[in-house]
Length: 524
Image (tube, rainbow, N blue to C red; front, side, top):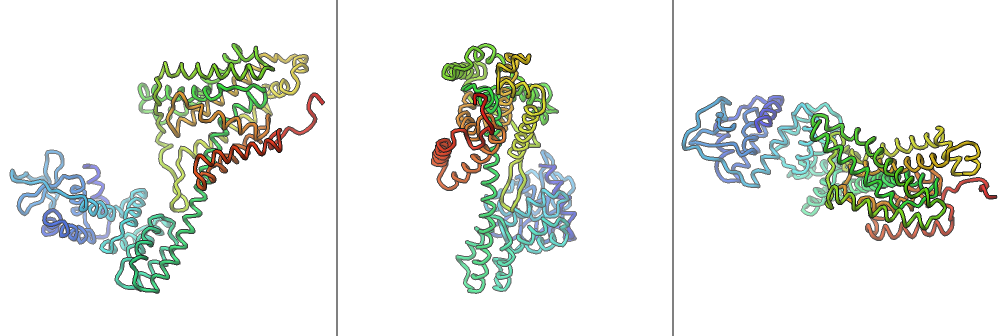
């Protein structure tokens, strides 16, 4: 709290104000009826100085006492005279200053007005948003002063909108009409709410027309922001489906193995991320923000190792027998879930985002894109590029494609097909682990994590075309965007049903998927 108070003092000193806090103002702010104290706060903010800012911050922190005519700011056990800023002896009869919720709201808004002069852009932006949501004409002089001092073009635009929101409650119709015209450029939901409130009580016909026009413009901007948000959410969901489906594109699309334990391989990657997080928290707390970088290869390696053991121990005996493979891997998935419940417990565990993945970027005024989703989209693109390069440009990729297309001929050419099968299955399992690592950043990690995505991942691979990486990409992004748009229109359950019906229809018309392998088959 002391640090916050000093910051407030610096901000206030940065303002072009020379008025000092007077004894009468200090007493009016700290004593009397609530309405009178609120009026005193408004008057003090219009000419705020360092002492005013310090007193308001102390009131917000419940750190103010009064004794007769004197006002004291408390810093721990020490007292400071609110007028001089010097240490002072606290009288024995000093009493705490109590502020109700209404007064607290006014004090917070007043502090936001003073923070308009902060040297930190993020603090100024937060202050503008606070003032725009609680317009008050008494703060107009301070907003005008901040407009003159502001050098950031984006914040100047937001300040102008905040000023217009204040003028919308002016007694002069001409100023209200002008304010409505300025607010038409806003993309904030709070502006729409403000216009609706003022429109209901507006007596002037000309001002009402201007408000209605501004309201239409604001609603149109918000509609575009909502559509952009749906597209982003669809791409985000599609990138997750893509990560999950990329492993299946190898184990099922290229190798023809129906692996029902694929979701549990994702789960292993997520729990590997959780374990790495715990190790960093205990042994390397100063480097915690980098734990995710270390968790990526660990998640890949853990899932790839389990996948290799699974292929060598079970699946290699079941090639060409899809029903037995399905039943065996389903049983293995149950065993893996129970193993995780035994080791980590049945409850979900939390995996924290690094600080550089927290928060988001605001676009189109009201749309915030979370950094964790943006990073996952980029991560999915990087994994896709690495996998495409590995399959198309490396020796292992050549062997995998050769064994997939014609196993006997590849064996005759000296390719160790059993080893290629193990490496390919381990690669697909490792990519599933990467998907689990990414999923840990947007939700809780639990034993049932993989069950929520395995069916969707199979649908993506089948819809895109078995053995087609490009088809997997288009199918994942297409299903993600389609699902999000349908959710906004019909709800989550009906959207899932509609997507499933769509896939069934497509498969009926094109059993080979949307992007079938071109050319003659090996049996032709």
